[in-house]
Length: 204
Image 1 (cartoon, one colour):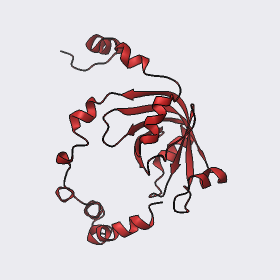
Image 2 (image 1 turned 90 degrees about the horizontal axis):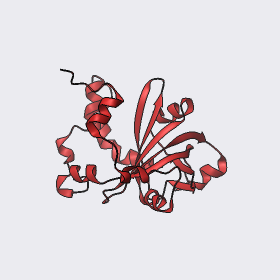
Image 3 (image 1 turned 90 degrees about the vertical axis):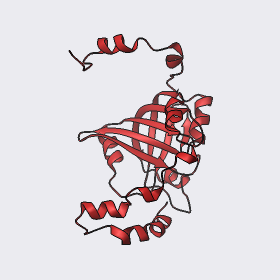
Image 4 (image 1 turned 30 degrees about the vertical axis):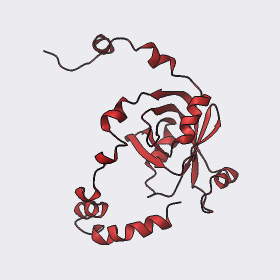
């Protein structure tokens, strides 16, 4: 018996047709309602694609850091990081992007797809300064589709329930992971002890 779905026809037979509410919500521009969600979000996941494969990167900042330039254009500053630039490398070679916006305490999320490029225009970088520090680049997204996602996933996960928070002490630290993967040549306790101050100085 075949247990792998290998065609769209099989998939449609299993799941049926989408409900009208799941299709009418998708538009090709940022509506006033969707803009409110974007401007309330301090966190998103950025999905990109490149020759090496797919990547999904967390992006977080002060609420309102994601700027709606107009109904077809979104601006996302790229702050200080570890210089891997996986997402940016992908965007340079393949402009397709997907964004998932989360809003603390709110179950409904927002999904946005489009095409992006990187800008280092001085005036644009300056407009995103925090503590006098501009981002290194700004991701400019041309919107192709945007729609809300119902709250089921967040509700199932109890994502915002403090009683479900995982204690940091129950997980390995970043320093421990680095030490294990580098035969103790980097990371370890000194890395973890230095992290809070290092993060404070390099947040923006």
